[in-house]
Image 1 (cartoon, rainbow, N blue to C red):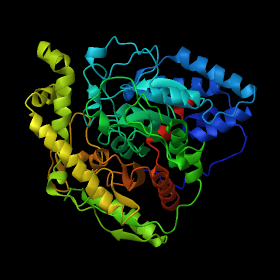
Image 2 (image 1 turned 45 degrees about the vertical axis):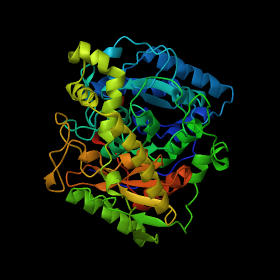
Image 3 (image 1 turned 135 degrees about the vertical axis):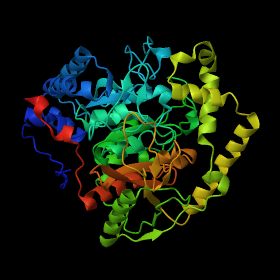
Length: 500
């Protein structure tokens, strides 16, 4: 795959060729629409045409209302003409199908919701719209966002734009595919155990899970493990993720997980300002190749990430080899037990009536969940508290923890998980082992591309901080981008044929 240094952010008002619209960053789009050198209508029309040409082979999109997207674009152009400088003016975005867009079908990847029409925008959707962004479509996810690949009986399979016979991962596979294929520069996903970070890693994108509750989510579908879930932001670079956080980080008392913002986050444009500045040179950094849990990693992935760590060290960053000291019960935390039990509570009655309505993988989870005992769930809650305590102790010594995001390159679409990792047999969730601990502990975690595997597919580094250090995490992620100097673009994104 081609790799080269990313183009510098341009403040120029020079017109952009329509052939390049699909590769624009969100900040460039907003700047050029505000200045009148780019028409939101022209941009959206180009992206809709591209989507219609390419998406039938990817399956990223499940609902596209072209007329509505163009109406939003006309409004953006009108706002620009009156002098508006909204931070995301005219920027197209996509929405994962477990979030709501008012008046549009929201199916949660399930036949149970095949005819459900969202009564209002999800909080995060409304937040991006208020910043001037344009919802261009809704993206596929696994049923109830509870599978590590993106497929379901209602909408079918989503494929990886880098290599369409492979999965983009899950459950935000449609969201990352929409950005990697050039349908939009940013996307909304969700992340309960890595569902934003892992798919972003598999498609060469940036995926961010903020501190739990930092982006409110007060209404919408009932979901399992809601207190471990965060709205996920997806973009082609850290700066665009920061722009999304500028629009979305807030406090809303209607969400019991939401909390008043720290003072440094309550300043407008605080996240994008942070990533525009170099990080503190005194940061205490730690690198853990297996998170202290003995997690398996494919050799080529380990080599690529270690090479990135070495380059950071060569650039002057002091990075210790260190890891949190987890107790055995935390290392073996029963994530799936809790997910299965809550799925059984939410959907067990419908499953009893008609198991055939469900993805067989999800049906099996519901069946497993009906056997979970209350004392097992209680013990899991105590274990979660121990995990938080152990990670907090680690962050007394270090500011940031660096580790892999995923231990493997993506695998074939028709397989639930890779059969082996690191030369040993892999369980169905071993590919997801590096991400859920940070949902368990409520901490911010960022996946940023850092290299390529043996098949030329992207590999990613995960950057983790203590609760409420989201800006520090993003700031160091931008530094990693700068130092590694890699541009990650799938062959589909490089292709401009849809614009001709």
